Structures are given as C-alpha cells and as structure tokens.
Picture 1 (cartoon, rainbow, N blue to C red):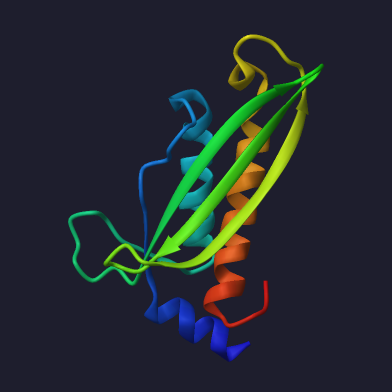
Picture 2: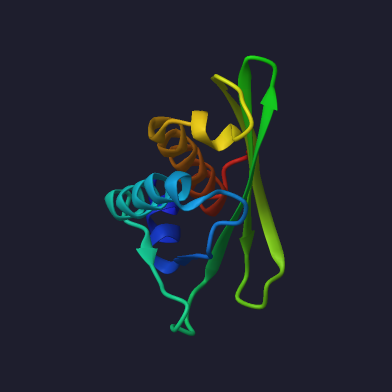
Length: 130
C-alpha cells in the first residue's frame, strides 16, 4: 500500500493533552499511543514544533451503567490551525460500577482505545473510508 506509506512519511502527528480521563487512565493510553505510532512509522511532533501536519485531541468520559462502566471516547484530528479534519469515536464497556467509574477501567482497555485511535488515523490519512 504505497499511499499509506507515503502519507505516513509526509504527515507529522502531535497528540494534544487528553481531556476527561484521570492520569491513571491516561498514562497507559498515552504510552500505547506513542509506542504504536512509532511502530507504525508515524512521525511524532511536539507542541513546540511548528511543522506538525495533524494534531489528535482525545476526549473521554466514563459513565456508571448499572454493574458496568461505559467509556466514551472521541478523537478529533485537527490541522495546525485547529480545524477538525476527521473524527474517530466509539465506546467500551467494562465490568464494575461505583462512585468513581474510572476506578474500574483497566489499563488494557485504554491501550485498546489507543490501538483503535491509531488504526483510525492511519486509515484516514491513507485515504481509506472509515
């Protein structure tokens, strides 16, 4: 798939700070995003760099739902000016409920969300229909 490789080489992706998830949930997510992006050949940028092609901003909510918790996530892919170019979204359910729904969310679920975010980004940047 030449277009995908070419798109990956020309795109430079920066992750914005995660919104809505506590540090305990955001840490495994962020670590997996970084590791998977590097594994897939995505060039990563920083906030200090001015040549980022795309910025991915993640928004999270964890809602108690009876004896389980629903994690809702939205990733916006933005251009450097902040205009949304693409959206990746979904939800995951995990067993357990309670006053703090985030306390029931295992790291592997957040890592799985990172996998879906990178897969969605790669599909979009390579021109595939998502």
